[in-house]
Image (cartoon, rainbow, N blue to C red; front, side):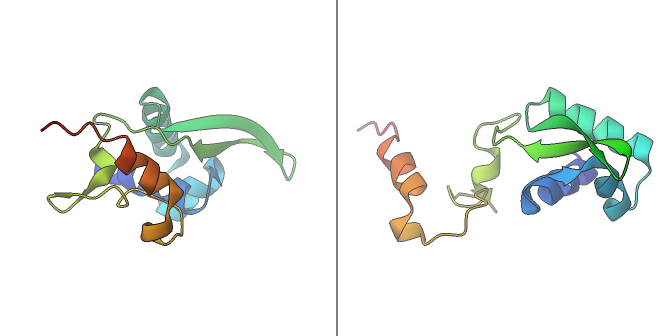
Length: 111
């Protein structure tokens, strides 16, 4: 994934979704570049798009859909270490995190 695509995805995740017209302005790119980036993220299943009208202008609301692209562990890497909380957008206490505990219980541990 290219750096601008990662920045776009992080912006969408951080804001819990964003208007496409705001994304390109915030990233300092033009609307055509933004459209191509969003199309690629859509094709990879990382975001979803909903048509909305705001201020009388049609745009799209882009939302992160929680799917991981190329590798299902891509967002779990922190440096060179597998960290299940690295890609999480929840603000929680890891020892008491229900999602983390479910993940740990679902590991396929082979002896």
